[in-house]
Image (cartoon, rainbow, N blue to C red; front, top):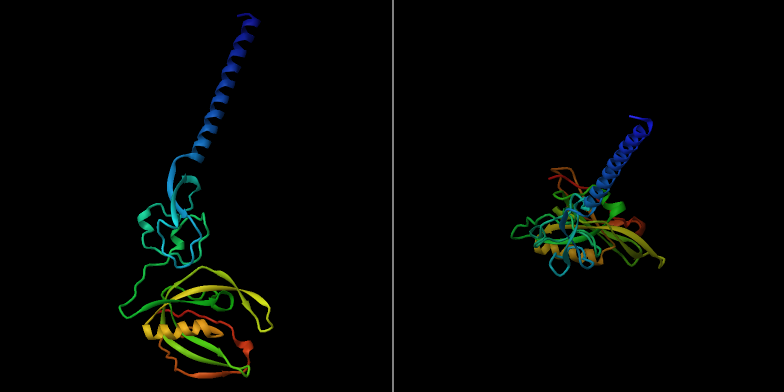
Length: 240
C-alpha cells in the first residue's frame, strides 16, 4: 500500500470516527429533549385564586399535563385525592396542588364544631403549635380608660390544623397601618364555646393560645392589664 492509499484509509477512518461522535451527540441531545417533554403526567393546578379553607372542585381546579421531570414530589396526580379536600391557606391561580396544601381530614365528634381563629405568626405561633396539640384560649378586650381585660374563654382545646402564613394590614393606635403576619389556626369546640371564641376573634384586641404542662388545670379568671402595650398574641403548644 503506497503512501497515498494509506492517507486515504486514514481519512476514511477519521471520517467514520467523526460520524460516530456526531451520532452520539445527536442521540444525547434528542434524549435530553425527550426527557423534558416526555413522558407527560397529569397534575392539577388552581384555575383561580382559591381562598383559605375553600373546598376544591372542578370550578377552581383544572387538570393539566406537564413533563414528569418538572413535577414537584408532593404534587397530586389523581383527581380522587382532591375530592372534598380543602386548602389550608390562600392558593394563587396557576399553583400546582400538593398534598402539603391540604387540611388533614376532620375527626370531629358529634358535639364538636371547627372554627378558625387568626393568631400572630411571629409573636404567637412561632412554630410551637401543631395539629393535635391542646391549648387554652384567652381573649384580651380593650377598655375605654386605656387598660384592658384578659379572660380565659375555653380550656383544653384541640388544634385541628395550622394554616399557611398570611399578611394583613392592621391599624395602630396612632392611625398608621402596620403589616402583620398571621396564621389561621383551626380548633375543635363545642357549639357554645365556638360562639365565645367567634365573638372574641371579631372584637377582642388579641386572642391568645396558651399551652400548659400536662395535668395542670387553668382556673377561669379575669386580670387587669396595666397598659395596652401588652396586647400581643402569644402561643405555645401542649401535647396531648
